[in-house]
Image (cartoon, rainbow, N blue to C red; front, top):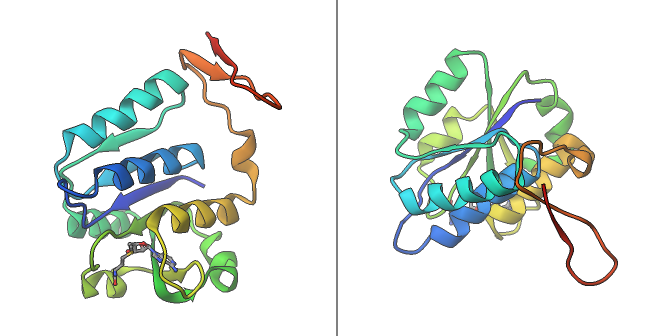
Length: 173
Ligand SMILES: C[S@@+](CC[C@H](N)C(=O)[O-])C[C@H]1O[C@@H](n2cnc3c(N)ncnc32)[C@H](O)[C@@H]1O
């Protein structure tokens, strides 16, 4: 299932670290790319640097218009999931979400515009408690892919981590 993450509400002066982690989490957990509805070359460069070193084909693009992006996605037959604590519980809706051809997963930062709730095909909660877009995205993707993200290949990287019981092992490729 091809998945793209749309990050909205990013404030460059305070969200750089969290937005970078949204992108890195999206990549590690099997999404194809992240669209950022703001301009932030620093965030884009950090994520591209990791993707370059660790491999795979994750893409990241900033300066997208979230409204146009959601509209185009739906016009092209894609399905839009908005992660929000106000939505329907993830375990309840995941069977329907899995039936989609491709997914745009919207995560917010500051207050999400009300319009997004109406545009989304599914408003999905990862518990009905306030927490974080990074945690919400990770749990959502893990449930969507049913754990298969643990076996994802990331070809073309310059380095690879060799899992070890203790210490750190990194291999140059
Ligand atoms: C720190 S929250 C702020 C949300 C903001 N206060 C609002 O009312 O829209 C940032 C983002 O984390 C995600 N999030 C937080 N808690 C969530 C939950 N329980 N389930 C799903 N997503 C959640 C949502 O995508 C949300 O837009």
